[in-house]
Amino acid sequence: MGKLTNEELLNKVNEKFHDKVTTIGEPFGLLTFETSKNEIIEVLAWFKDEPELQFIFLTDITAIHYPELEKPFGVIYHLHSLVHNVRVRIKVFLEAHDVHIPSATALWNGANWMERETYDFFGIIFDGHPDLRRILNVDDMEAFPMRKEHPLEDPNRVDKKDYFFGR
Image (cartoon, rainbow, N blue to C red; front, side, top):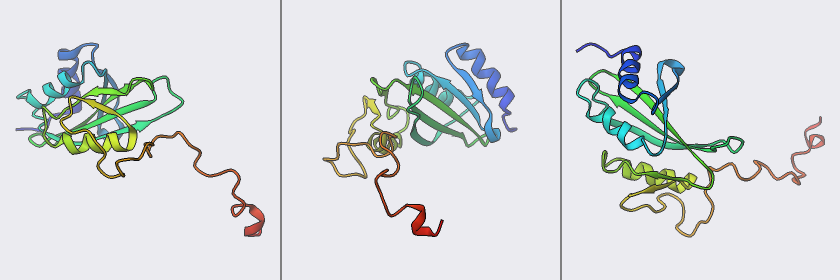
């Protein structure tokens, strides 16, 4: 079976989902799509179950935080078709006051730990997850360390002044 090209894949996605899925770009040859949280499970299931595609391997689920955007949180899914040796990235952006998204654990058992890690570091709540709790940080931690909610350095630190370095 020949390798599936990005153009063929793009045509199949547009044919199936029309305006439910938009194409963001193709950085470094990795076709990147965006959809809504209401459509994400349908889109992931189609990529996995479509016989011509067979994106059966969920490589990763993670998140990003861009505090300056209207929808500051993004949940990122990386899928791999082992048959065609093609990868895709699917993004869903969430509003700051509603960081809920459906869980993909019904499609991939491995999504369990990936979603727990994403919850632990970004505070994204995966609705329907069988055991959504912290996985790497302490259970009573109240903050989500990967959110860009605090300055990178304390502006009152004196040990970072230029005169300490001969400048």
